Length: 248
Ligand SMILES: Nc1ncnc2c1ncn2[C@@H]1O[C@H](COP(=O)(O)OP(=O)(O)OP(=O)(O)O)[C@@H](O)[C@H]1O
Image (tube, rainbow, N blue to C red; front, side, top):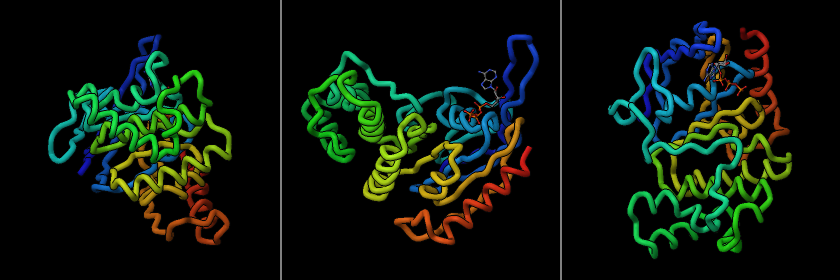
């Protein structure tokens, strides 16, 4: 469904030197697949996600969705960033309905859809609240509901739970899996947390760098719900850890 073919991205830094953020990335992501990109800081995870989102264009190679070249941001590819990026002047409901409003959906319809997604993330009681009245974890749930309500074909998540405490993070990871199964979405999820990747993913893309490259793509077919204490889970985390240790 989503195809990256030999993708490279160069940036120039403030001294005018060229930085190769990623090189030679080739990856095919299937419909309804949940793929995690994992790797050390600076290995090009965010760059890869921004390229898929169309927020950056590749210096080389090609990215396509259902055979159509990605050449800019579009509603079919929606990003959830690490820090919730809600509109503080809009109610929670109006925030979640935003994408549908942009698509010209009627008020009644978009509010009904927004309420459905707020219920999915357990926040239907907060529909009338404003973002600054909510905790960080709640705001992040609203951001996830907003992305889901826009009904993108591909949901791109850049360490969306990275700023949350361990317990909230745990809850949101479980919720994401529940929603993903109920709603059938294709998700590309960036994390530097190996356990998070093994908990969520159908496939884990282990990246190395800089310059960012794919070290290995690992199938992660442990039965769900996954038990972090099982020997299989720990074994998979250890394998990824060893790959990252040897990665430069
Ligand atoms: N806008 C930019 N201009 C110049 N260099 C950039 C830019 N964005 C990223 N880079 C460089 O590209 C490389 C990859 O960065 P990227 O943010 O994709 O890594 P990452 O794996 O997401 O890191 P982290 O886990 O720390 O967020 C780094 O060397 C970074 O300094």
